[in-house]
Image 1 (cartoon, rainbow, N blue to C red):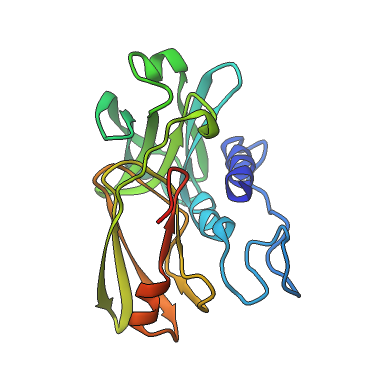
Image 2: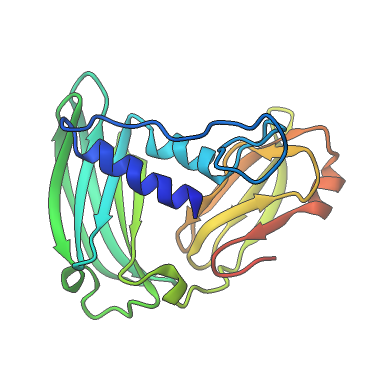
Length: 241
């Protein structure tokens, strides 16, 4: 909730450029253990907010701001000091990956800019789709890779029927570190990779995986591979295992 809330405000500020060029959030870290607004805990471990901040403060970002009126403003943000040649893609899909709407176009982003590309109504985004089981995925693509992604839902996620994503895992070694590959059969919203009380940290976390999508993260810390496998707990808004 903290990560999503601050992301909403931070991307709104960036999308308002040049009226507002950005913002800082309170607070960065803690001087004692406890529940707080910090994005890094007392032990130096990143909370969900800090992983999210790396994405919503990235030089290239998508803002998909849905209003209570049922319209969504899609803005592409570039803090690069030179123009960027890109593509932007918009897809509405159900939690199993069936696409009901798709659009893709080329775009040239000016330097230091926020470019509103479209305003869409819920009727345009979700026509014919079950709002309890569907999301719109907006992506900014640069050099063939997804530089930023935003998800839009017609309903608050607490009112949606989010599935068990059917996560599978595979362990390997990358650069001498334990590496975990996670694959989602169905939509995995707000995936958190946890290891209980072990003092370790994944290289990325608090992720959204689309149906069929995989992510590989490395694990930093002194725990053994056996201890990591035993302690691993995967949690999403749809399920935990």
